[in-house]
Image 1 (cartoon, helix red, strand yellow):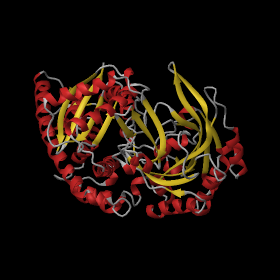
Image 2 (cartoon, rainbow, N blue to C red):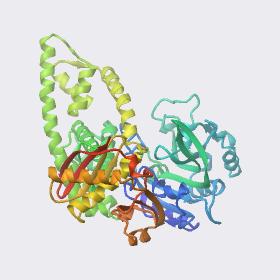
Image 3 (cartoon, rainbow, N blue to C red):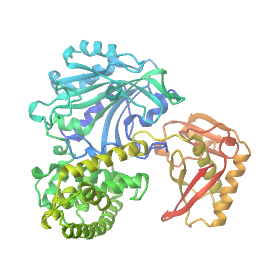
Image 4 (spheres, one colour):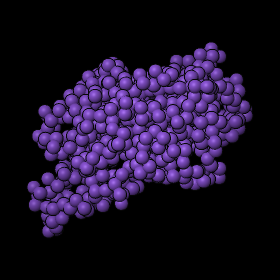
Length: 595
C-alpha cells in the first residue's frame, strides 16, 4: 500500500467516526518554549489540558513533526528527523467523547480489518505502574476482550509506557503501544531483552501505534514531580506514517518505501558505492535532505543557533556521508528535488519554496567544502608529526577531533591514514565519540528536545519589547521569530535598518519604564477572531487554535500567546539589551536579559 493511500485511509476511517480532520500545524510551534513541533498533540495542548473548551470533541490529523533527540540513531531502519504522525484525539468533553475502550477497538479494527495485518502478529505494551501512578489494569482487560492473548501483553514502566508532557509540565498519561512482529528474518542486532519481544532492540518487533490515555497533569513543586488528574480524560494517539508504510509493504526499513526509495535510487545513480554496501550512509543522506527541505520551506536558514543550527547540522552530516559514497559536487540539489516532487501535492509549500531550498543546499555545501579542505591540511600536519615521531597509531581523540571539528567521518580518516602507512583503531574513535555523545546529548535534550524551558519573566519582557519596538520604530515592526531560555530572550522582527545605539537606549528605557509602573498582566481565553477584533497582535494566524489565550499588560500591550507570564511587571527586574544585529534582508534580532 502506498503512503498516500495509508494517510487517506487513516483520516477517512476516523472522519466516518465523527472526527474533525485538522490540517497539520507548522513545524515551528507558536509556543516559543519548544523548538519544533515534535508530536501531533502539540496544537491541541490547550484542549487536552482543559484550559480551553474545544470547538469539537474528536479530531484526527496527519502532522508534520521534527525531532532532534535521536539524530545519532538515524541510519537504522526506523529513526528519522522529520516524519509524519497520524493521530486521533478525544478531548473528554461532550457526549461523543471517548476513552480507552473505543480507542483500542478502533485501532485494532483499522489495523486488522482495513490494513489486513494479522492479529496474531500484534503485541501490546501497557503501563505497569510507577511513582505512585497505578498500573493500567483496565487496558490489559480491554485488550484481552478484543482478542489479544494475555501472553502477548507486556508491562513496562514510565520510560516506555508513560507519555509526555511535551514541555517540562503539562498533560500526560499512561500509554499502550502496539508492536508488530516482523519475524526472525528481520532481526538486525542481538536481542537486548532476556526474551525477545516489544522494546527489544534487535529490530524484529516494530512499534506502529501509541495510544496515550491522557488523564494527568504534571506539575513541579519544589523540584518534585506531581501528577494530578486532569479535569477530563483525553485520548491522544500517534502512528508513524513511515513505519506503517514499511510494515504494510513488508519492507526491510522505512527507506524501502515510496516515501524514500526514489531518493535512494537517485543517490545510487550518483554514488560510487552501492546501497547494499553502505545502507547507513544512504539513509542518513536521504533522511537529512528530506528534513532540510521541510525546515527551509518554513523559513529556517542555516545558522549557529537553535533551529538554524539543527538545519546546518543535518545538511553538513549529509555532506560528510556524501563524501564516503563518492557523491559529486552539488549532489544535495538533485536529491532535494526528488523530495520536493514527492511531497508537493500533499505539502505545496515545498514547491513554492523550491528556489530557497535549492539555494540553501548549494550555499551550505559550498561553505562546508572549504571546511573539509582545511581538515585535510590539518590531517596532513598530524600525519607528518606522527611519522616524524615514529608513531603508527592515530589516537581516538585525534580521529574524533577531525570528525567533530572538520566533519571527517571515521571512514575518511581511516582511508587517508592507510595512504600514509598509519593505523586508526575504531574502538578508540568510538570511545571518544561516546564520551562526547554522553555530554552533548544531555545538553541537546535540554535545549532541542521535545521539551524546552519556561521562563515567564522573559516571556513577559518579550511582549514589552515588542510594543516598545513598534512605538519607537513604527507599526511595520512584526515578530519574525522568538526564542526564550532560562537566561535570555531572543526576538527577531521586521525592520529595514540595523538599530542605532540611540534606538537601543530608547528601547531599553521604555521597557524599564513599563516594568517600573507595576502593570498587571491579565489572561483571557476567547475565539481567535474576537481576539483580533479587540486589537490583540497575532502574526502566526495558521499556528493558533480557534480558541486562544490573550495576554494584556495593563493598557500597554495585548498579544495572542500561549504563555506563561508573570502576574505583574514588577516581578521582572531590569531589562538589558545584550546585542542587536541584522540577520537577514529586513530582519533584525535583539538578545536581552533581565537582572
